[in-house]
Length: 377
Image 1 (cartoon, rainbow, N blue to C red):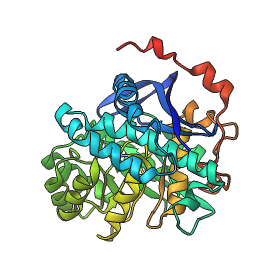
Image 2 (image 1 turned 30 degrees about the horizontal axis):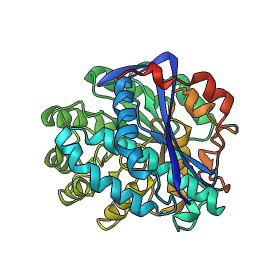
Image 3 (image 1 turned 180 degrees about the vertical axis):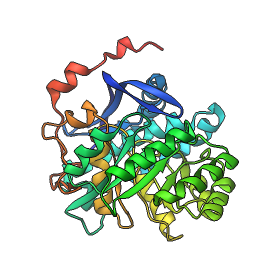
């Protein structure tokens, strides 16, 4: 059994309501998928992170076609561990030289995810079963991506779906943050968990000042209050404020993960399967975190393929607390599959079908597909 083809699939659709964070505005959704095909006629699908910035698609496609495909074509797709190590060994130093570890890890993520999907289809097992854990029937989710503008309607929709945890974006303006936090606590039922995400917006002094004021809102965690590489600062904020720190989506490689854990910078680690080397590398991250007794809560802000992979990951690997779900409308999450992923009683059911447990809606894919020749380099 040999890999014969690695094919990028770029999808794009404009948004009616932009998604705003402390570092930018998303006016369209761009979804980058990758198909890995074998000489048996079987294939797997993975997803490559490409939310911010949208023009990052150029780096991802170039890395995939010129850096990764030549190394994996001809390999046995069942030997995922060897392929994964080959890609990391070849490209990690290159990424440091290039200054682009992100695009390399993102592109490897998509291929690795596709290989797990392909292996599951080939063996007849779900990815969760392949991961070897005691498979759960469903996975609990929290609604994220809320604010800094109006969010009441999205909160109400997810409360009706049984969601009991919500995450609000902060970090643009202190008074607006306080108004939003008060509003959230007014509309949320008692005992509902409330998290906040600063998207690396603050400096240490500002973070401590704001978080001391925000403590009254009974926060479950603060996500990325500082730059992701300010590990000493994150540890300081944990100590001074007493608010748990969640981070990890921007930690690339086991070395950086270990450094964060050694510096006591995290209470919850947040691997993203489409950013940090796929299922294989994120599994190493959470296993490493487990040795520090740090639980994980996967980061997710992409399309349905990464969501499906995250559900399988949480179902198959112990130590998770909850799974992120972007509350904002996203056609690539809602319409990419023939059978949409739905929330019932605050949970997503774990598919038992082989691989990631889904089928792409080919008509939807073709309608929104961007021809590669239209993506000039």
